[in-house]
Length: 211
Image (spheres, rainbow, N blue to C red):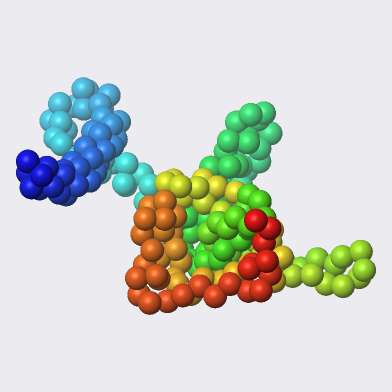
């Protein structure tokens, strides 16, 4: 029974991701494919699987072509101005637009590097991703360096928190952004840079946290 249970769980672990992913893709494909149902009802000869999905792809492509020229940018800017003036809707629109620009923009360097920062309290560390550097002058007139850090949540890394961390208090991880993101999504179960023999060297201030 012990052997049977192990083999059964192994098979379940192999099949479950495949089945769930396939089911989600089917549901997405089916919902998108039904968008052109009114057109199909009027012209039955257009009734074949994948028409709606293909139509959506063509629409997205055409919008991208239109938005890439001068007239398109002006029209989109005019529409943005109108939406920004609508209460409640403007907040949701701005949030979705900014999040889309972060994860869908051409540049793959939105996350510069992976770091550990103390969050949510001193002595507790979380993995975050540096998006930019900021400099501010303190009351003493000295310039202070900060890191703009996106702190993703587990297991959904598309949501999270924005932190501004003093540069000297961030611990850079000796791993790629992709490796660190895998660790966040898995809840710490995947630790690729540990398995590859790399080590995290904590600075002196990190070893002196209160117990």
